[in-house]
Length: 164
Length: 167
Image 1 (tube, one colour):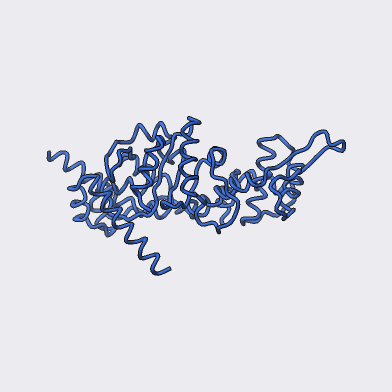
Image 2 (cartoon, helix red, strand yellow; image 1 turned 60 degrees about the vertical axis):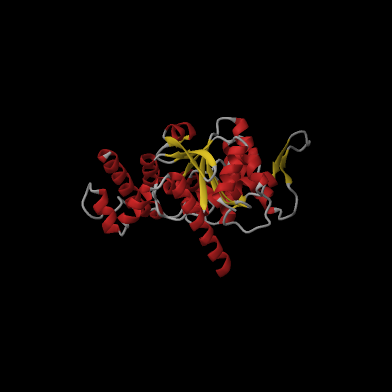
């Protein structure tokens, strides 16, 4: 149960995704601890949806916050019809979405992302300015509460780049 | 559940739900059962082009059984030549996915513009006023992304362990 196993599992099955949310914020320097991995996946390619659905089914994904034992079929049809899912899995909690508020669908998210190597995996994370836009667009109190830290991070990064 | 959460769980537009409730003369309630019913009505009207009244009647038949059948014949012509079968197991899966999203993500939004704390335009002062430890941020910037995520993994594991112990 870890981010490393989830990221490793997704890249091993060649799922095209960009890490967004708390893990992306931590990659940029945020000190907030998050327990779930948020990803934006490419939803235009049927093969990618199948690959992601297959990984999630392998992890026995089930909707988070819902009592257990209800019929839930984790396959590509479910993912196509409910493209934003908040799931709990054997590997940890994961939120999958086909678009990010304030940024756009996967293509736009990918354009505003950068590749990093961490936890033994190479993957893409949403860049800091887009992460701020996404938090602002989400409009929830917990997102607004995160903004001062992220904006300070951006300002400090800019000043440290200027100094270099 | 809020009105917005109900609409997200139903994967329907809130305005459509309110207008349809008025047309059907049916009071609208923001809860899980109603979201499930409205979701099916929306699907039957928007995807299959059924009239609102026919869709409402079929959704009531399909969800009112309470049995263990996963496929329900919600409607059929008198000769039995044409029928509408609803795959309840599939619908339940999609509904549960949307319901989870509604409960986890669609928490009430802050009304109006976000409050600006500290000096306008100065991100560092604003963050300090807000209680952000700039020293912590500076030390995080000095690390590589790999080091930052390794630290997050360690901290997240600690939080998970603590939750397990206190559960």
